[in-house]
Amino acid sequence: MKMLILTYSGADPARVTALLDAAGVQGHTCFEGGRGHGLTGPREGTRAWPGEVSVCFAVVEDALAKEAAACCRKLELPQGERLHVAVMPVDSFC
Image: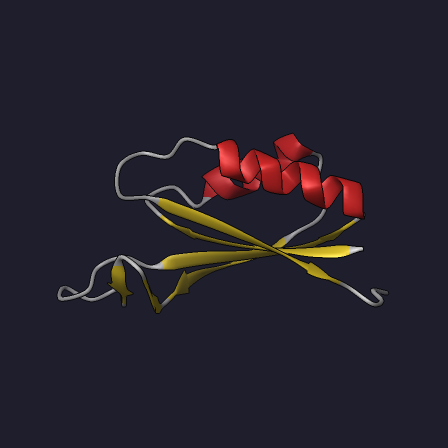
């Protein structure tokens, strides 16, 4: 099994859940309002550093993880939006 961790910074967090649904991921958990710092600078939700990050997690079978990650990489986003996906091994999930 694999865990998908998706980070999205953009105007439409529902874009990530729609992507997961389209890829066949049946269950996921998302948190909105995240803050952090990446290659494009800080996302702090303030006037000085606008923007926030949504983070979604899903645990799926290996083949589905590969397919979902490929869908994420193919997604064309509007200027300024970012989507990153990490695929990590899961020893157990119950």
